[in-house]
Length: 223
Image (cartoon, rainbow, N blue to C red; front, side, top):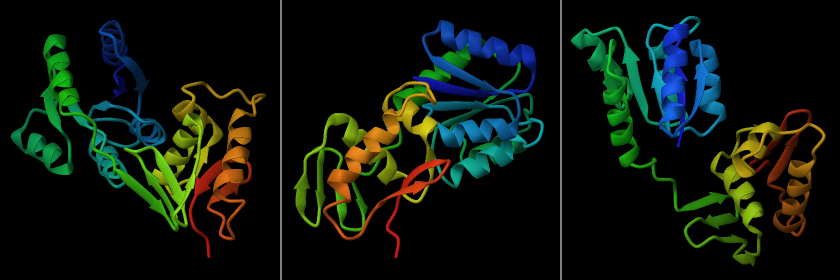
């Protein structure tokens, strides 16, 4: 399970990340709202622990921007204990609200409760133009013709299709499909894209896999 902590107070942030890692979670730390939002949007976290009073962008704004594109569970962890603040946080889309000072055992219990709710259910079928991905049956068709993909090709196509219209960098793709840090000397992503194109795009007049030079790739239908 992967958790993002967005906390500007150095000791508190380090304490949270250390405690979560010792409890078996993979934990990343951002020390301001802008960096926190960028990480939250660029990576797939199972949960975000978010402070409210953050430099550059406060927690309310981070959550608002995040909810425009993602439904990652968010637990507010803040010194603001007014009822109005708690209500505001929950109305903005937070899943839980814990006031500082807190017992780490209680934080862990709340995290486990949120995790038990499970991830937001993704669509069983993803469609882009005449391409259809049946996620449950691991079946891909285009113009109703079955296309055989390897497991990694399927994961790559599913990632790009479910975030259609969004440019994903090679680093993001490598992290989410291969669970690896991208090495600029490695062309694993480009090779995989080339193989995927040969199956998904080359036989058809309308191309769906687009290259954004110097950045990465996206899937979308272009007129």
